[in-house]
Length: 262
Image (cartoon, rainbow, N blue to C red; front, side, top):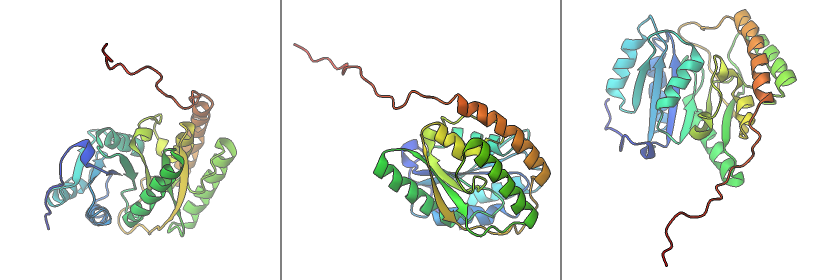
């Protein structure tokens, strides 16, 4: 059923933007869009799907969803660019103060978004430090080989990057848009967001989330390729971490320019 348009298409009207990159995810799109909308019902939100040059029925499914769900915006890449590039494209058009990210295969559960958001807001209110609430999959619904590869990657990240987040590969996250825009962009950067957030002075809050098996379609990543590319990426991230900004808090010290008269 088509619902009424949101309050206003202005940045101040949007509390949270949920970014979802997809490539050939026909069949997974509508159920996930409807779940996201239900999880954020009553809020001022937007959902931004980025179709990374799909060759299946994803464009048609997205068009049908956009006609029925007014909060949905759809971007499309002419050329396939990868998951990180799709997230970046969505981020640059997002209007929310907070950004939610989740995978488009349906394994992340949108109902977890409010808990992630609440954890981030609570921590920011207590400490004044912005950051990211990142999911920790309690019971992963993946194959034994994929779980083994994930554990190996986690050990490598912990050893070389001092990344103590227990599930950096979890796709569901909520963070401040202002912080996200500061993070360096590169291919596969979405796999290293806890390290990159800390690089920019942010805090990473782990929140336990649900995880589901993939019901339709196939994974776009081959396990061996992911491990090989991941190891290569780690050396680039090490280079970035060693050159992290070190200016600390920045405060404006100029006097009020308002004319005091006399």
